[in-house]
Image (cartoon, rainbow, N blue to C red):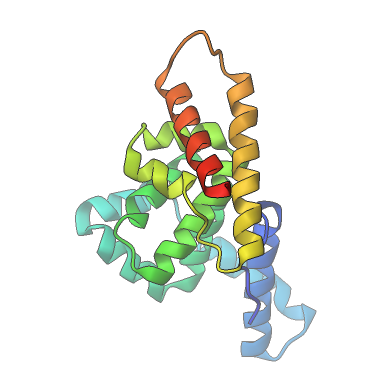
Length: 191
C-alpha cells in the first residue's frame, strides 16, 4: 500500500493514482497491464461535490463521512479535489471537517491546508470569516511529523502574504479581514 501523507499538492493526484495502481496490482497480480483498469476505476469512482453536498443535506454530514470511509476510492477523490483548491470541494470539506472523527478530520485538515497553499483566495472566501473555519485552515498543522507541520505553516503563510500583496489595502473587505486574521494566526503558530 502506498501512503500519500505529507506530500505536496502537486504530487497528490500522482500518489492517488499510484495507490490505486498498487492496489490493482495486488488484487490482480498484474504489473503495468493493470493500469488501464485503474484509470477506469478512477473514472467510475468520479463524483461531484454538488452530489455529495446534496447527500449531506439529506442524510447529514456524519452519514456521508461513514459512507466515504467505506468507499476509499471516493474518499481519496474528495481529499484530492479539496487539496487542489476546487471551490465546491472546499465547501464540502469545511462542512465535513467540523463533524469528522479523528483520522478523517486530520485528512480533511491536511487537504484544506494544501488547498490554502494552492488557492488561498478561494479557501478564505469560502470560510466567510467564520472563526471556527478560519482556525481549521489557518491554525496548527494536522501533519503528524514536525518537519511536515512546519513546512505546512510556512507554505500557508507565504501563500497568504502573497495574496495580501495582491489585494487592495485601501478597501477593507471581508476577504482582506480574513487574510489578516489568517496571517496573524499562522504567524502565531510559526513563532
